[in-house]
Length: 202
Image (cartoon, rainbow, N blue to C red; front, top):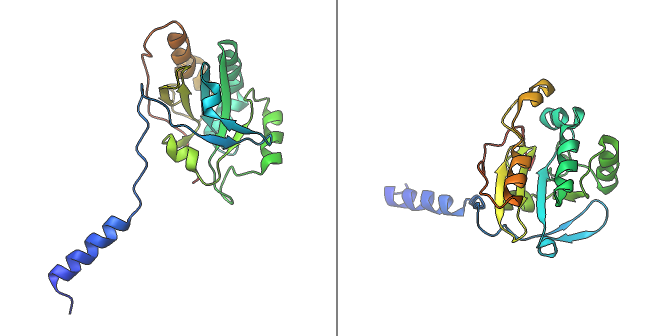
């Protein structure tokens, strides 16, 4: 029979072998650096965008919450306004192969065109490395990096956590508010918020 000490030691060993979750990136600190593959066949290095605001938008074309923002044209309008403010916008798909939302490069590119997205491209993240790096929990979820390379926002698109497009009219757009405040040299009032939507399909 196993002794109590042996059982305890065995249990401890199992616990220490469990993978640990990546720590959430901290607001006001350097954003996690990365090199990502775009659906357009290009490779993108975050370091090359120093001096610009960079927006990362986690997406899943089949998620009802993503459809809410794209079907109403709210996401496209937010992307366009962010571009006017000087930001570079990238969509990110961290769905694993075989999971909801996963597409190949051609599929992602075709979907961008179909919905009229203003994103530069979709970062393909099938292994979930970029998603875990930024603690992406839902689709949609937004992270904003300022020109100095610091993370200034991470969270929801707005303050209406529902899949109903009718809620958009009375919603506070956290993304544009963060960009406008940062560009004006102000601290971002809402730098983090609880992201809502479908879970990222890692």
